[in-house]
Length: 200
Image 1 (cartoon, rainbow, N blue to C red):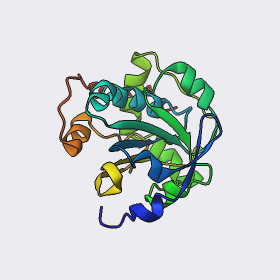
Image 2 (tube, helix red, strand yellow; image 1 turned 180 degrees about the vertical axis):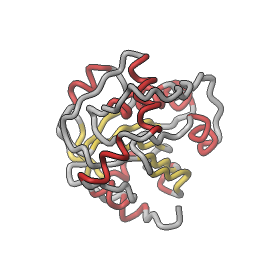
Image 3 (cartoon, helix red, strand yellow; image 1 turned 90 degrees about the horizontal axis):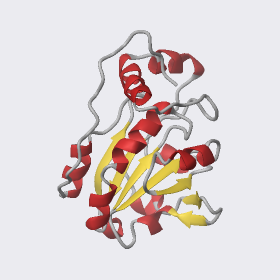
Image 4 (tube, helix red, strand yellow; image 1 turned 90 degrees about the vertical axis):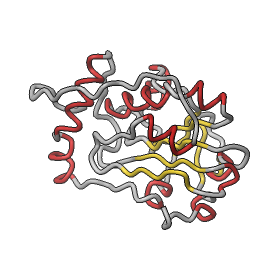
């Protein structure tokens, strides 16, 4: 966490759903914030992870903590919003500057296939499918994501999680521990891998 310069990253511009330009630092100026960086709005695993994190929204709100989702492009945002996968505010990092600054890697066409067909992705895709969460292949398939949790006023990074595989996600308990809050939610169980399932 030592390598993250919040003052510098905080100047990066995001676009709100309404099209308004917003500096990233405004999101943590008045309260702590959980920033969930999606790979794609159409990504099945991202949608499942968004639904998981959203289970914390009532407890985050009760503790004065904001929940924010950020995507690397507009593609798929309307379908994502209409699907109700995420309970926080949504923004777009059109220049992908936050993604670069936070070390969220980009796959190459060659490295994506083995990563996308890996066991972790298949496990989450199985769970998502069981919950009726589908995905699609629209948009930038090569971007990875993660989570950044920042204390009020940008005083410190409480947690910085970088996906290694497209199927990586942060357990809800890790988020609540980083924020030093308790939450009364049941995390989705990680499913057993099914070789017949491939990722979307």
